[in-house]
Each structure stands twice: as C-alpha cells, then as structure tokens.
Image (cartoon, rainbow, N blue to C red; front, side):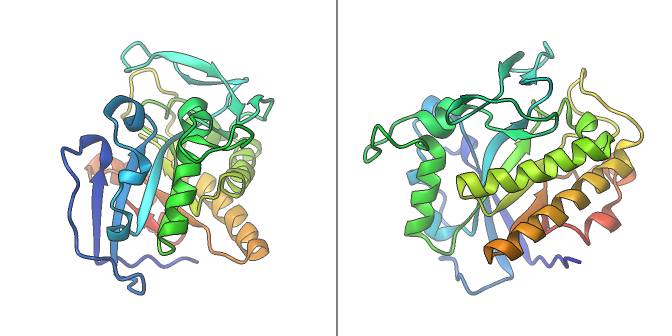
Length: 263
C-alpha cells in the first residue's frame, strides 16, 4: 500500500500565469517539498506560453492537462453549459483509433502530438507538447510528468467508466499504455466530481463513491505491475476538493492507501 506524506504542495496554474513564478531551487533529493504545476494543452496556442517556458528547475512535477476517455468511439462533452460543447473522434498520433469504452485517449491531438516545434523532424510521429515535455525532462532529470485525465469539462463519462469491472480494467490498461507510449511518469485522475457536483449533464450515481475507489485500485494495480516490468515507479494522483460534500462522497481513507497524492 502507498503511504502519502506531504509537507507542502505548491500548485502553479500555468493558464493563470501573468509572469514566470519564482520559487526556491528544488532539491531533487528532498521527498518533502513538492512544486506541482498544471500545464494545459491550449496555453501554447492561445497564450504563447510554451512547455519550454516552464521553470522546470524550480518544479518537481508537471501535470499535463488534459487527456480524455473514449466512449463509443468519441470523446468530449456536448453539455451546452461547457466552454466547448463538442465531441471528437478518438485518435492517437496516427489518426482515428478503435479502442474499448473507458480507454484514455489524447485530448487535443494537434497540440499534444502533431504541432511541429523547432528541432522536430517531419517524420517524427510524436511531436507537439508531449515531445516538448520529453525534452524538458531530459534537461531536468529530477522532473516528473503526469497525464491528467478528465477535468471540469471532460468528467462527463467517468461515472460510466467506473461503473463496471470491464470498463475499469479498460481504463487501467489504457493508463499503462498511455504512460509508456508518451513517456509520462504517472496518471492524475481529475474526476469532477463523483456522486454530485460538476457540469449539469454529467453522468453521476450514488455508487460513484465506491466505484471511484475501485477504479483507482484497478489503475494502481496495473501501474504497479507495469512499473515492475519497466523498472520504475509510476505515480497515481487525483484532483480532489476541500468541500464537505467531497468528503462525504468519496472514501478518502481508502484512497489514501492507493494514491501518491491529492491536489
């Protein structure tokens, strides 16, 4: 079982940046101090803030947001209250793919793996932000990158994913495939939120409370098995809430033994 210890989490929200933040130099040997930042796929295109602009030498973890889950061949959220009420065909770097329901897929293939940066060759299959994150880690060996799945807009089907053993196993295996394919160090499940809350049209059910735990247990087991094969320790985290309803709707005592972190 995993034991979570925290002294401090500093969340750097790259999409709210009005300048480069300054933190103390990260001691890569320290296990107590973590500087964690979310980097959303769209900020390079919309705000001109590139992956290589991140102060990686001052950070320990970058959460790349967001991947999504595929359901009936598509991903996205048609909820008209959302910022982008659309669905897209599920794709990898080579184009449309046929994957089981609940599988993690690229959220924005153009920004994630297709956009060409200086130094990319035309023949490279994986370019875009994900390639830039790989290069950032080469320059900063202490840095860990984690793929965030869901988020406020794309949590609409996570209740369905967690509802059955089959879809939980699909999610767990796809988590392994995703981190291996794209060079991530772990998975961050951003389910907003089990049982209640989130966007109005999200799938939700009272059983989400127990199913959230089961989904994370399956993912933990798959990542641990892959880690033994790959000779590394894959991380598993969630984005949680500090609200009383979140405490009521989640088995946090059990999740603490599964996860490497709450944010």
